Length: 306
Image 1 (tube, rainbow, N blue to C red):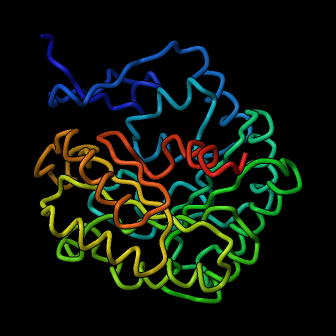
Image 2: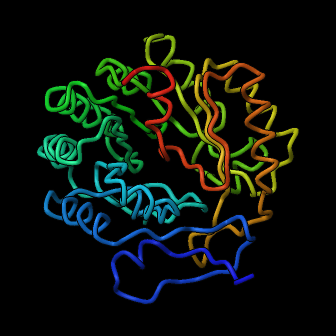
């Protein structure tokens, strides 16, 4: 059997240097589709001066999603004010917000013909509202430009600012996603500037503010958590009224980031999916390459939203 590798997709797409390869278990493979559809999406993003989390976070699904002309837009720049040890997005102070960015996101969504669009962002803790009004402006632009498209947002925690969360909720996205990322025992190591309960409270507040919005959260595994901790986390999310859960394998994005403690077998991911469904989630996506926005349209299809 040939050796299987993780490919640094950002470097491979840009073509600047040779892709970085790392030997992985046999179930962690990336099928590389034809470049032309990928280049068409990349050209559109560059022409509209847009950023995608697909590239910045070095997502292993970039090739698959871009070949289908889908992408997750990352608004408010490519520089995050936090320094989570699992994330490849660069850290620093962001540039001033671009008031024209919401329009460009909406036009790119229309050009790609997306039925379900995902909008995320870096953390902008230096802003008084964390960028909540920019999220709201982007949602409005999308509603105006592509009224039949399902809108999903994946927001930071806004430092627990309920007014900021309410601003996004009032813009009426169909799905509100905020990732819990890891079990509480590992928070200090994995995301030291975040708080487990603060993230739970945000998710609960979304449902309190508008019960018609689907709430969603994602978990990375392979960082040293136990099965019991994962199940307890699921129960915490359900207790805070989360509808949708995603579970995926953590993959080290490069030197200087957290090491992978364990490559979780696909059978365990199937077990987590079964447990989550039995506990009561409306939808659970669980697998090695599952990410927060990966194949997000599947939920919309299952719930007959589109």
